[in-house]
Image 1 (cartoon, rainbow, N blue to C red):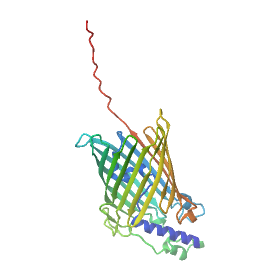
Image 2: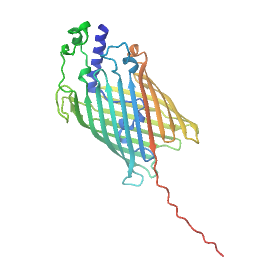
Image 3: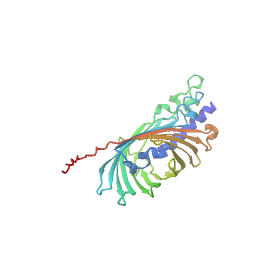
Image 4: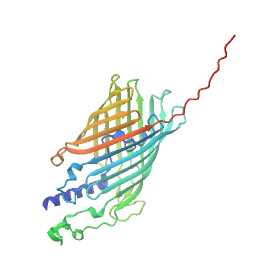
Length: 359
């Protein structure tokens, strides 16, 4: 009984903290460009890019047979999908405009706290020089988000201590808790900036800054607020700084170190990654990617992936090294990501020339 109460209290605290500060994040952040920076829309060579990523966190810790139903199946699940494309040429010859559409769903904790959203954005890619070796991308996204909880999944201490049911089974009528609103919707705006530069034939880099929830919309999961939001809880802005350096060492090997720093309402995430690539088959265009990362005060990361022509897949696992590892036993989050670039080009029109022989 005591353990059951502690677990219920622990998950409830997680839920209350998530109400104000929860936002999505991924280990393979460059595999989810729309949730990293709106200015990444249309930033690739091709016609259309389609991708998705799925993160499952603490399943091995929370989803155990011996746990109370109050906390079982309370792991964190975060799927996201996106599609983007460079659509038209810009005001100048080497400029272009990209658009993107994204959807995400984040479920966390005992109460099934769900944070979902769909957004559409546009980016202008400005070529600084004539050969477009340096490009500045400025983009923004607009859309709707929703926060929701399942009131029937909450288990409070008084529901056990004041229970009138046999064997002190949980009695929701004795919990003393009530909730008049279990979901709220609002609209939101995000914006970002990315600088990309090709240093030479062997090296390039990109660095970007983005800010999410620019308007800090309000919502409430306690009192009724209507479809347009307007509760007493504001969504805090999330600021993101990210960068990546790519260097080709020889015909086979390349290195791709990257970093991510983001902050939201006093909480910070600092992530460093060292990635490498190996050209496995030049004729079939098969590349292997592998590396490690570290999220400060939280987790070590093992990352692997493969690129086969226009298909790119990635797999990551977080090894928990925080103070929670006494419970997690170093088990953390699992991620699977993939994206595919469709290339449709108009065939070149070749005018046949007939050479007449001279006599």
